Amino acid sequence: MVRIGVIGGAGYVGLVTGVGLASLGHKTVLMDIDQSRLEMLRNAKSANYEEGLEPLLAQLIQDDWISFTASQSEAVEDSEAVFIAVGTPSLDSGAADLSAVITVAEQLRDQISGYTVIVVKSTVPVGTLDVITDILSRNLKEGVDFDVVSNPEFLREASGLVDFFAPSRVIVGSGSEKARNILRDIYAPLLAHRTVVEIDFIDSNREIPYIETDAVSAQLTKYAANAFLATRISFINEIAGLSEKVGGNIKDIIAGLELDPRIGPGYLQPGIGFGGPCLDKDLRALVQVADDHSYEPVLFNGVLHRNKLQLRDVFNKISYALGPGLYQKRIALLGLAFKEGTNDVRHSLSIKLFRELREQGATVIGHDSLAMAEATELEPDLKVSSELDSVLRGADLVVVMNSDELYRNIDWTELGFSHELPFVIDTRGVLDQNSLQKAGIKYQILGG
Ligand code: UDX
View 1 (tube, helix red, strand yellow):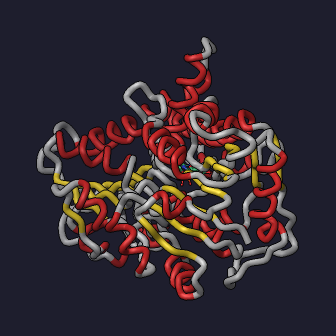
View 2 (cartoon, rainbow, N blue to C red):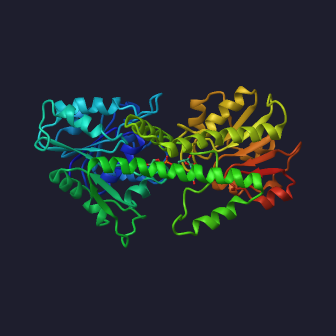
View 3 (cartoon, rainbow, N blue to C red):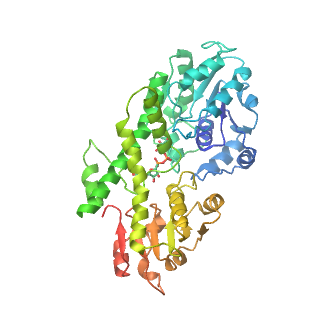
């Protein structure tokens, strides 16, 4: 058992990581400055919807594996490892804003007593670990009082627990043997498929790869992973755009691509582009790192450029379908979160589209299985309704923004439209085309 403090423990990464570590049998203290989120967590409630998280949290609280505090010194005192999971949002320049990480490090300098491993979970540009080390070294000794380790996260929202307990790999970047040993102790139960609470999606037959490397390579691996995923998405979006122009069928094209073992499946779903808190931010930070080192990131810039064009193309399709002027046109947006399965509306491209449509005078009605409250909190002008049928019946045009099962299962023949039929744009290729055709509805699928 290792005693662990998690700074930024009420954020998405900090919370999933903290719950994961506690489930491995480590006494874990989650620290955050957000008092209201802490209060929710004490009652086993999470602001981020993540399937299975709340029951797990309740059990860990009951069995005394996890606790919460607003005091960083309380989380650090007695901890052998302190995980930093605070946010690193984009600055206007695209560079990562490291102010939260630096504030944490400045406080740690006065709080550490006894050898402590500082584990950086936040996605930080190469060089940041040196900055943290420099700050701590002002009154502590590296290797004696502390070591700083990079241990990047690969958690997808909506699949965060699966990604923690059944990770494709664990990467630890550090030159210190002492620090590596503590990290091995921390992850030993995970590699041995041993938890103190029941986790049903652990596959005890699968070996989890554990990679030890230097800190720079660990950090760059994280950026490279997100850049690669973003590249696949922009790639398939570009192929889908081309397919549409020449009359191809993108579903068949994907089927033909993903069977090639050199390409493989996943991240080949065309759509409105990649949204969410990570891919765009990390890619922009990578471009900034490349610029700082006088290296021209032509590919990454292209990936970002395609991503911008994607939403504009959808907007143009809407304008084309509805004729000149969107004023007072009723547009239904199905899917408001940045993807299905989450209530996270940060960096949601649906919200961006809503803003553009509103600017043109359109009336937008949104629907989402999980994120309607969050969307209206962010955008009070956005009308939402949980009555999917009535959202569809009243619309001049419907745009499907994500792959929610609910949208897949819409029976368009049953809706009983009383006035004109809506035009439907399916950016995800999820709708039942037979049912649309039977209902006589005109539709367009991204990529043909
Ligand atoms: C991502 C990474 O996957 C994760 O490893 C990292 O640590 C954090 O960032 P996340 O942002 O939760 O996770 O979402 P992800 O599932 O990767 O999707 C990102 C965006 O790409 C979403 O907007 C999604 O809709 C879009 N996407 C994804 C596509 O458009 N097509 C795809 O094929 C896959």
